[in-house]
Length: 399
Picture 1: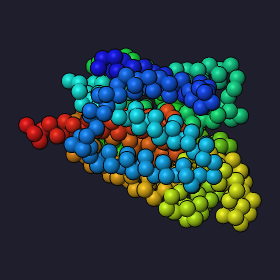
Picture 2: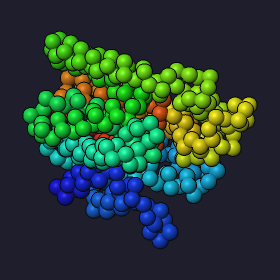
Picture 3: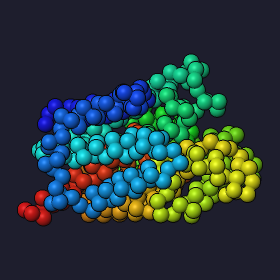
Picture 4: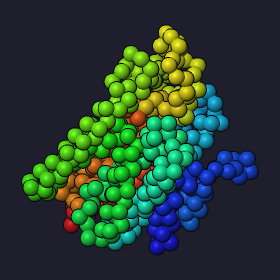
């Protein structure tokens, strides 16, 4: 079991390694998938023993429905080969990670500490990405045209999607005695990182999640007021600084070409595609192809931009890529997770997980913080942490 724990921690330390792609016998894969596959084979017997009907709950039903919806989506996709690749990398591999983490947490003495170690590993790997991005910005190499932090990604929003839930989790663990220096370093680097991405969706999601989580936590009134004042000062400074930039002015402009007007077009096309493919969706990873072929019809005009891999909304992404079955599964996961978090809100692990989960959900209003290799794994890590709270809840009931 210790070998498996070490391998799982290593996987989160190497989370960005999915960007190192190659083929095995003509099948596209990457370093991260190979590492997860090796761990899975070592751990296969334990996983098969863990998953019986007595161990399954509402959260598992949601996961199963997402899996079924995505699997059916392969057969309705415009490009079955690309849909199969997305199904493998964004659905199957992350669900295997969820299964391994859940199995480990049911067999060890201190599952909460193990979940925390995985988040620390994810924090380290993401901090390294940020540091690499800092180096790029300082040297003027490979940065975005508006000098936003993007690191190894194509745009800054992609980095913000990864930073958000990881930073949210660690912010509410800052007072932990164990690994305090490492955690504080992660928080500082990731905070600077998300500020430099200048992702308004990411920043609003983080501020909103922290604000809601703060008043759900059991901190004293003085601590809550102190954190709130600091957060409001930071937010005020950010708004004051950004309000004078072209990016901020563009965001408010929905008549001319801007990020807001483009996003409104994306949502209109996404709804159009959903209405015409309501039951089974369009298949995993098929939004860009469908957008190119259907956008002009949906909008009754030529779209401002043609290439959009995702619909920039979490609910629309699940509906389109996993169909009605998948979106029902996603709703079940959200309801089950929030119920467990609320029931166990006095637990030390609950508020950090709640903040991370809320960050994903809020950011999901304007972006898709799941449909990518690393984002899906982080999402299931949060779900696995929430299931640990469920384990403790069951132990209390049995006692």
